[in-house]
Length: 150
Picture 1: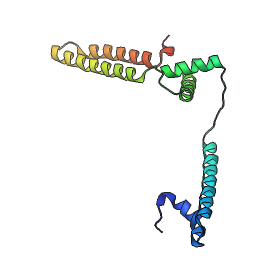
Picture 2 (picture 1 turned 180 degrees about the vertical axis):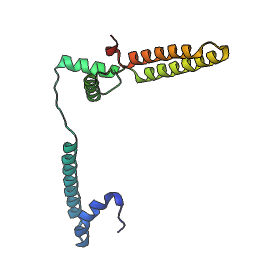
Picture 3 (picture 1 turned 45 degrees about the vertical axis):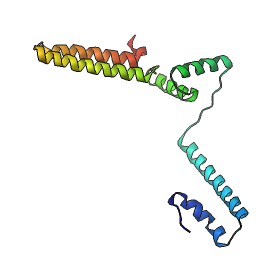
Picture 4 (picture 1 turned 135 degrees about the horizontal axis):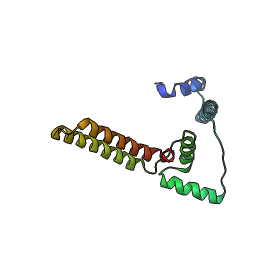
């Protein structure tokens, strides 16, 4: 019988049953037993590596969380996790990552155009670029961490 590397452990588990010539019903029960043991082992390892918290919300709190999660284009559980970690790290969740990335791209293009103008017109390009860099950094900071700006 050709063994699949992905299911090697299953084949090893079923090997005694296959050698003894067990019927299909016995093999089905053995496979279910293996799946149950495999899932239990996976869950034990997952619980060791990850901590799970259970929180409850009343209806009004749930509506608030659901509405804000939709605004952030996230599922409620993902939003709660990201928002709590952002709060702990004094960061801010932006409403729309695509908009922030578009603004970053436009700022970069603006910087490149100003650099080109400075080179073409022999204006003091280092001063122009330093002002633009400062402005760009302030805008990016305001977009990603507005709570720290005030």
